[in-house]
Image 1 (spheres, rainbow, N blue to C red):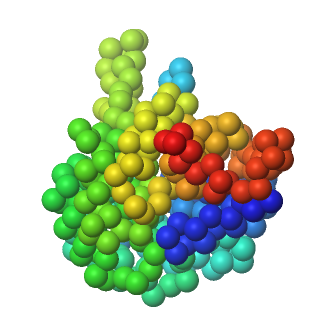
Image 2 (spheres, rainbow, N blue to C red):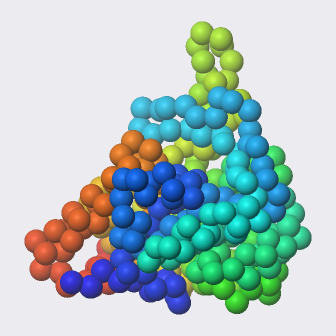
Length: 301
């Protein structure tokens, strides 16, 4: 059985990865699962300097997922390189560095820094809805997407993933702009903007007023956007958005995702990636499939 996938130069042993911001730097999860089993790990979003994130409360449950407004809390790229990357490189899995900037110049600078390390891929996050500067502001206009991707592309020879926001009018034109500007792969979708109001205080519950909705509630949106985008671009898609079972993984691959990232489900079940991978193998066996590539994008034909 062949579970390997090729994300346009980033070769994974299997299609199961974890979404940035849901897996930290993997230390905590190494107590529950063998990190060697994962196709890749996308680490917590990195910024040039350490960030303390947004004011609390930063997380709220919803009927079918969760809202968060963490605001890219992280130790900064230099601390990651010094303390976290050596630990991650002990494992036989690909390391994806999710990077974020307040300005295009910051994106360029952090790209140059991280390109001199042993990370396997850079995930350019232009889709975070929970920061006042940068993030989604770069990812909602095709011209701005083109500019930031092109400038980052010029700073690195590393495999380059561009992470897209669903909070746009037409995600396919954003994806196409990223492809033309030099992206090797698209990851989608990030969270959908939402909010919750505390009926006791009669005020917004989250410290940031609004946050990003993730979990099962966003899965149909993600599948539709991946289905639409698959038809418009030639580079592969790393799909994410509410995946919590092997059936969800199959649905994403049929829609056009080449690999997938597990996100919010990690919070409720730290074993979820292992369980999905095992059940995915069973699915292929039961359906006499020798590889996932044989059903990639099959919903289109």
